[in-house]
Image (cartoon, rainbow, N blue to C red; front, side):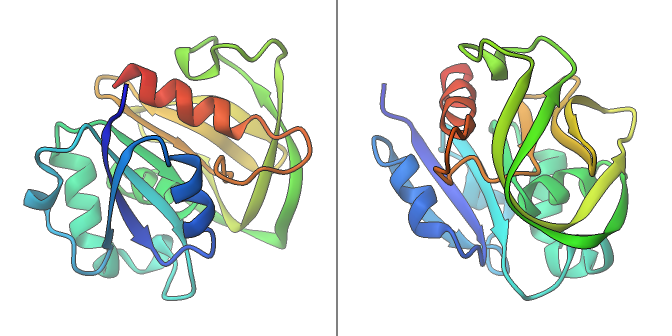
Length: 190
C-alpha cells in the first residue's frame, strides 16, 4: 500500500538512493533547516535522512531544534537514518561519542532484541552500509537498543511511540545489505 512520506533532508549524500528505495510511495522532501513541526501533519510517516557537512547533532542542537521538536512532539511515525538516528538520540538525551576513525563501507551488526523491524531477517547478524564518525554509546530510558556493532548502538526504537532509527544507511544497496528489508518493515508498521 502506498504511503505518504515526508523526508526531512539533513543534507545527505544519499538522497537519490533514499528516494529510489522509497519510490513506490508518495514522497515529499523538506530541508531540515526550514521544516517546522506543523509540516509533518498529514503524512503517514517521516524519514529523517543522513547528514551532510553542516554540523553534528551532538554539538549543534540549535541547528536541529525544529527536527528535535518534531521527534519529541509529533504523533507521526518516524524513522531516522544516520544523522536522523542521532537527532532521535539527541531528542531523548542520549550520549554520543566521536569514533577514532571514520566508518565507511559494509559492517556487521548484532541483533539484540527480537523486534518487528527485523521481520524476514533469518539470522542474528545484519550486513549494513555505514558512513559516519559519531556513535551513540548510551540511550536514555525512553529508547531501547535493538542492535549493536563494535562502535555502539546501531538500531533503536522508542518505548511508547512508533519511532525507530538506524545508525547505518538502509537506503544503500551494498553486498548483502539488509537495509531495504528494515525500511520496508518499518513502513509496514505505519
